[in-house]
Length: 441
Image (cartoon, rainbow, N blue to C red; front, side):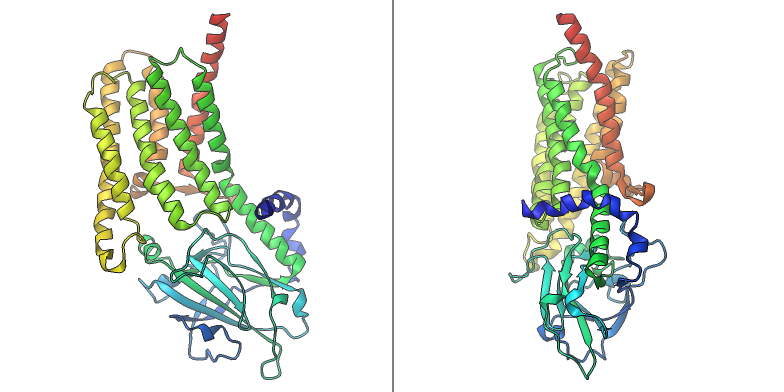
């Protein structure tokens, strides 16, 4: 339970955040300035006395109002692929020298950068303060980057050349798949850390968690509503032509709830690694969601007896898609087989197009079957909203914005679509349930 204490702090911080800009102006320093930077990896680069004079400089100063493309965290800058290192993956180091004369080291804390690709360790004068990610193995195990606080009182400080010099060093590791996924922006620190007194740092930490909280609160609520829809569906018989239709709908709802809940688990809690997330979401849950919803929509349109070939084709497509998605993961193959990954990536895109083509077939056949029936106009809005969520990747390729930022908080197109679908389905099922109860009474 201790690992969830920050969730309580997020909620408690709501009242504090409104005073946040005024209360910390003179107690913290945002390190959004020039840092020394070097690709590669040498352990002694963390040392306070290491001479980094010949290292290049990278600027972590954001443009006014710049934010990340996820939840809306402010202070975003592009990664090292946009700063002279295109295509580079692996280790790199950031170092900065800070004059702390007149400050009591034991009172100072530092936030970890809340947006980094993919994992990092942070050192103060050569002392390891902590990390985000597991560096115990040959290759770091990556988890979602979350707001962190590091106490500088843990380190031992030695004056350098008679000055109270503090050297902060970040050892950052990025997977090749991350670079490939965002070749013009990925790599390293995107939002600079902040150093200061405890009260100011904790206020920033709570603000960052609050931003993340609101960014994913819809993903936390939607699974509960999908489950409620499933429970309500189990108790209604008037809307369904058969028990099989109801079972497929319930299965699709529960699988979608799992996808959305897994998103929250990954970004809020430190339990699920990137590899586990890829396996659970991309290899298992996403293909099964497409499979279950297409089978459900087939029943919605009342064409389950006409397309006799459909289940076999859909089952085969789903299995092949899952296998292909597994082989497309950058960490699944050893380095010598990495060229095959690109082929599997292309194949996965074609499999998704095949799912979309099957959906279009269902819609066309369903329209022909029910064009003179009012039920068609109940099914079509639900199918459109579902398709918007299920085929978000294809809509993004068509340059339809994937995330909007109302009130400065990122809300995805998929969140909007599923919210609309949930409201629409409740507006249909609740009156049906009342009608069924009155009929039985």
